[in-house]
Image (cartoon, rainbow over the protein chains, first blue to last red):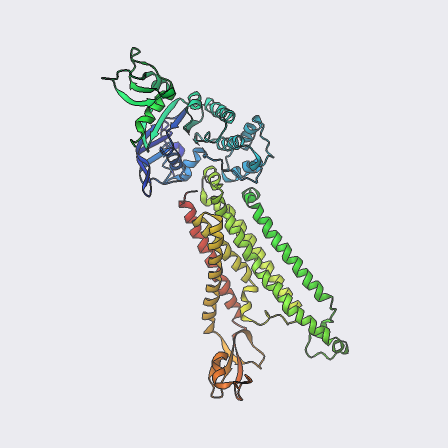
Length: 288
Length: 307
């Protein structure tokens, strides 16, 4: 049994070493070594199949690593799943609610499953969004179901919140409402959030850090501020000789841009977060 | 807490309650029909010389025919209602959760999958045991009510219908379907495979128990007061051999009339009444062991599998 008190206080939210997860012939995560520090919101970015969901599923013990190690707040979720799960609130890609059950029954069930589950806290969060406890899950919109799943994850009062592409199936308004709640939770400061997504525009507003994955490997990791400060974008046709080129990536209206590692304001122009991420995603794309 | 943890299984629990209500209605209808005959209790005694019974001989025969058919049918169905309940609840316990992806919620909010499964299986198994014992009591009552015409009376094959038989069968069906559901994770394949497993297990236990009982049984003349529960009908040849009916016909029956030759005596293989409780308990224990073993494996499967 790993006791919370025995952990070093600065144990990363998520740490992996040479982590590989293989499904028969498909390698979902390949020799991944990352460390996400405690606090703030980390955006886990990457295209479909990059290994984002697999990484989060490994954290909650839904999958087992093929090789390598991982830990959540210093706890190995394979060997000490129960202890690790005590530290985690998890929102899956598709809200896994009981379609014929009222929301209040979900909260009571969560309390029965996890004695420290904070029913009033989750209930209040849902009330603030106008979701009645008597509402039946199957009759709620996709956005509302995602909000219920988020309220349940927050109701666990766990110090780590793992959100596995919760925005993927939401309309723009529902996305914004969802991210408002995430940002509000992050502002509280007592929860570290890892949010996986490929919707870049909205992520920019809530994320402090980026972890870009491609083909199961880390393409880039760092803070949002650093990623903007340390990269420049060259417009179509500009000479990149002698520069530390990350990748060439498609811009708007068919233009080709080049992302380079540089802090020199004389080189190209400052890129947007989206351009930095797209540049790294282009780096990770396997040549066809 | 039990209410909250079993809330996701409400549809199945209502279904099982519906089955019980349907059975009670059917049993009530059959008993009501029998009561309508208004046969005096004394008339069920074969030696009765009460003139009232003699005048009601035709009604008594109709009563006994109706009871022998319908009461027996209702009693047999009663034995399988708890098992069917175990089957339905067993599928809902894990397979439905995995199939509908709701296990993701339970397995991420709840830290321990073992606790999650315990919170479901313990109350459901207890419910099935109560249902099984109640079913056995109802069957015993119906058998007594039938005036000794039920085929269940005196038959070794009645073990699944009496005492702890229905409860044990229900636990076995429940455990096996929980296991199959945990392994397959889909409702329809689990229904099909679980059904096949339960039928196979029932036959296996019946066969095993019968084989063990063969060494403990005795063979007596069928004309005697049978001192136990019947397993098999046999014949004794004039030279003293005990053979089955099929083997007897070529040598000892008239090919035209089918009449057995003189000197061939009808015999019955019975379990002595003194050891019947042990035989019945052994049958129940086999099923309970099977159910608990399946549940134990299901716990291990749930611990390791992906939701």
